[in-house]
Image 1 (cartoon, rainbow, N blue to C red):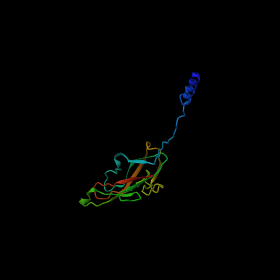
Image 2 (image 1 turned 135 degrees about the vertical axis):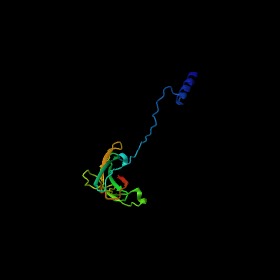
Image 3 (image 1 turned 90 degrees about the horizontal axis):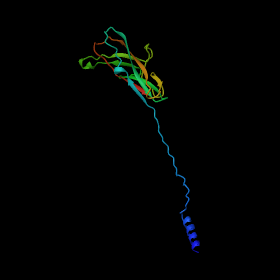
Image 4 (image 1 turned 90 degrees about the vertical axis):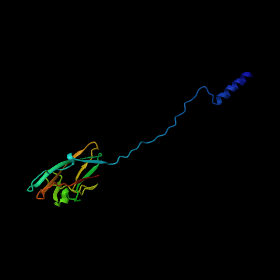
Length: 176
């Protein structure tokens, strides 16, 4: 009887989870996503010295011309439209240079016009929006690391004003 009791004890121990051979359990799994939303972006910089220098001229000078570059970089496939706004808020690219000597009585304003071409025939103004070029210049981004260089041309039709140093600030608006 002793053997039968011992055999029964072994069977009970195996049934209680003390098996000699174990099976591997399936791993528990879960998933998650990595997400990112990339938004459109553009960067603009003005050219060397950030000015168009029309030089030193005599009062008899006419159609004094100059140019400088701006660079634009926009995210890939992003359409952009660039407007130029002289400080007098002109949308037609027509500006006026003034002098810092207004306190000394010089109130002259020297007119100039901005252009997008070297023949000074296509006005570059500020009617561009985020969806239309207006009288601005358009392009398509090729990546923030890739800049596009655009030349801005300026012309002052006359220098028949009080001798002094004149300047104006133009804002470059990149709409995208």
